[in-house]
Image (cartoon, rainbow, N blue to C red; front, side, top):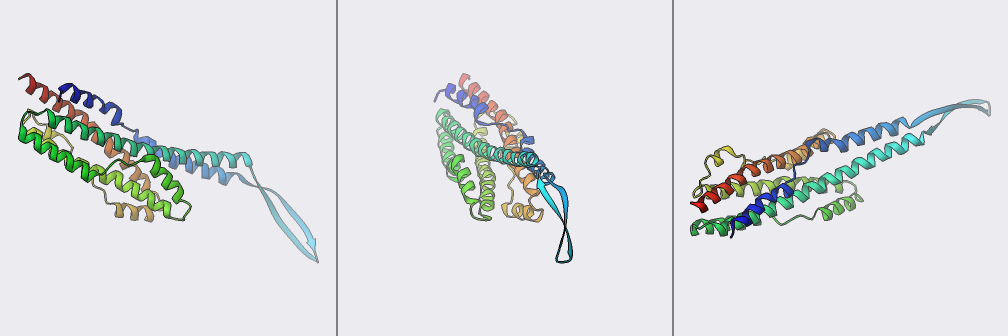
Length: 258
C-alpha cells in the first residue's frame, strides 16, 4: 500500500472529523424557552363584562391572545426543534464518517507495514474494531424513527435515549480498540511518546441509565449536559486524532526513507 494513500486518508480527517461548536447545543433549549415565554406573553386580558341574570350579578373577563406574539413563540419553538434535529443528524453523520475513515486508514497501514506479524495483528484489530463499534447508523432513518415515535406518548423519549446511548458507547468501543492498534504500531514504529501523551483509549464511558434517571429527576435539565458531552467528547477525540495520525505518518515516512 502506497504511503500516498495513507497520507490522503490522514488529510481526509479534516472533512470527516468535524469539530462542532459546543455552544450549538444551547440553541435548542434557549429558543424553546424564549418561544414559551412569548406564548405566555401572548395571552392578555382585554376587558371585563358585567351583566345581571335572574337577580344575580355576574362579572367575567374575556381574554384574547396577541396573535403576533403567539406566532413568534411558535416560530422560536419550531426553529429550536429544527436545530436540535440538525445537531443529532450531525452527531450521527460524523460518527459514521470518522469511524469508516479510521478503519480504512488502519487497514491501509496494515497493508503498508513490512513486518508481517504486525500486519496480521493490525488486520485482526481492525476486524475486531469494526465488529464491536457496529456498522454505520443512518442519520435520516433515525431522525424519521424519532419523529414517528412521537405519535406514541413517551416513545420518542426512549428513542432519543437510545440515540444518545449509541453515540457514546460506539465511540467508547472504537476508542478502546484504537488504543490497542496504537500499542501495536508503537512496538515497531518510532512514535516517541505518542502513547504517553495521547488521550486515545480514555474516551468517557457514560452510564446511560444514570444519565436518564438524572434527566427525569431534573425535569429534563440534565439532558442539556448530556447533549453537551455528545458534542465535546468526540471533539476532543478528533483533536487527539490529528496529533496521533501526524505522528504515525511521520513514523511511516521515516521508516520508509530509512
